[in-house]
Image 1 (cartoon, helix red, strand yellow):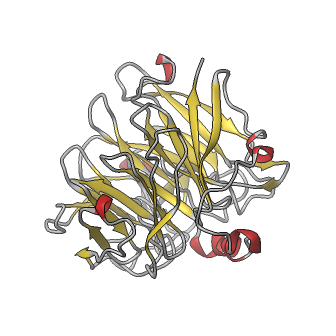
Image 2: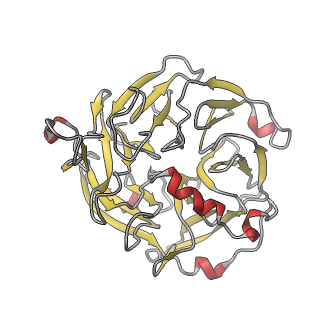
Length: 374
């Protein structure tokens, strides 16, 4: 949710994590045993000591890359394909909250708060402190909702959101509360969705290529409203309601006057209130049972502004055969929240070529691997 309220969690991390060496350690099964999954599924550590792990992406050679809430970007190679990273390599440091990572044509794209960088031929220079090319440098430098999640769409363009610089307000410039896209070289910047308070996760339907994205609802309206949102954007130019309405029908107490809720796109699925839904993914692999194919997994980072915490889990949104309508919203994996004490916060998902699913965690400084063996 809000950047400023999340920051203390990072600063107050145990010293053993803050100064841990950047190399894999033996799995800590005491925590993983708390995670509850459907029968046949298992969870293990793919990598540990990945400080503040956020968005994750995979290269053509199978190397996984991780952005962070700090100032580093990591490479997590699994050369022997045993489902666990061989080492944690810091490939870049000194960056401005490099949350977002994406891979295209052997190049690693990294999204800082205010710009997008590109590291060419990255797989061959993981330990060479590669120098980046600046792809785009005109993003706002506001820290509030400043984490950038990036991905290449079916159209070959790089998609970059810009969150609202506030809890709820009339943004000072049109760029705020939007989803945008650009050519891989940074040209052709175009806004394709408006009224999006803060999306830190999106993907495209394998059925019809429509864009789907999570959106975090505003704070300070109580424990139970508004819900976070899962939205569908089949075309460019749609408006999803911020700052006038949240979750489709919850008006802003001040800014909604004179506005009509039906003027804006309604959520495809309402999620839990304040769960902080983030890096969603369609599952397209063959390792999981067939009922999960083309369905949506959503990491819920967890609530900070609720008297009873919720989230800290991975949810599943099921769709009908057309891939356009949500038919259910259930919990797939949970256990990062024990009572009212979280030991981890799921952030982003990544499907590996073998069909297993990686999950990043910026509190436990880890990347997990969820697999199915039946």
